[in-house]
Length: 227
Image (cartoon, rainbow, N blue to C red; front, side, top):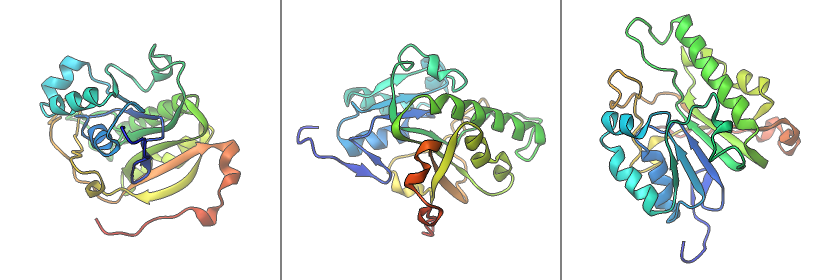
């Protein structure tokens, strides 16, 4: 950015080194980049290959173009199960690692409340937390946005993070309207370009356990704004 002035959008700043994981059409990353003016502090990734992404999300084209124009490193074929081994990521440390609305996939024979699918979601988050913890710089945070009503609360996000050596620092409402232009895509192979209802959604902020003394339970807040 020309002026060098730090710019913020909600929890995210142009001064942070940010890794975004599991992007859909990259509209969330593009929203951050527009706010910051430059995206040189960002790495945005997708599980999909570039070709598959374009086939599923036509809207990604303008977002990818904007991200690259603003200096963001965009990576495809990044799997959370082994993202710490990716050649472009394995030696880097980040101040914030973001995974918005993680999902293990859609299957015609499985509903969200099905124990098999719930376990798949838990396996995904477990792998993400275990990889992400080693990619944090000192004082860094891992942010997961997800629904916290049934059956999504059966994923036990806080427990999975704790097992990976992360503790909950704060839990705040996730409001889509706070991120202009963001479109939450289903992904997967069934109606992948459709959005889904955001109901009872929160951003869970985790940090490494050795930094938990910087916070107290009384400091953990839950915003109550309607959305």
